[in-house]
Length: 136
Image (cartoon, rainbow, N blue to C red; front, top):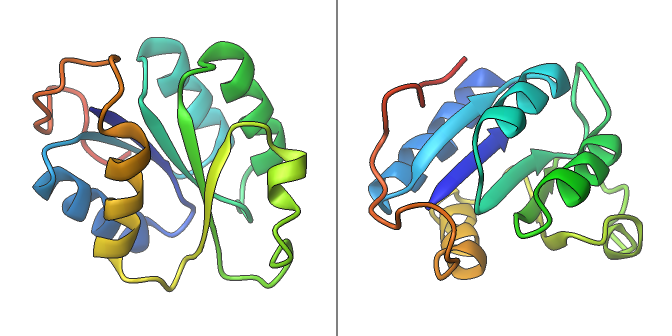
């Protein structure tokens, strides 16, 4: 299972990365929309953990790009804001599968990703941190 994390706060993204790697995922970390697009053009992902409030870029535009470029990728939105707390994110992003607080326990976020993307046919299913998968 390949997972892309798009999170502006590097330490938080690396924490999620570590928990997903414990679940056997190959994880890539991008701290901006541009870096995420680069990864999306080079790799097929089963899931994307996407911070709704990116410091550099637009998460909803990125979700649209993911829907077009990788329609099978499952997107889990995370945020530290109450915006979209009414669940309307699912109306704005057709590929949204989850919406969690960025303060959620990392193991809960990892469990959601594995639940929605773990059974996908994409990737080799063996996981591991891979050659070019470290945080960027």
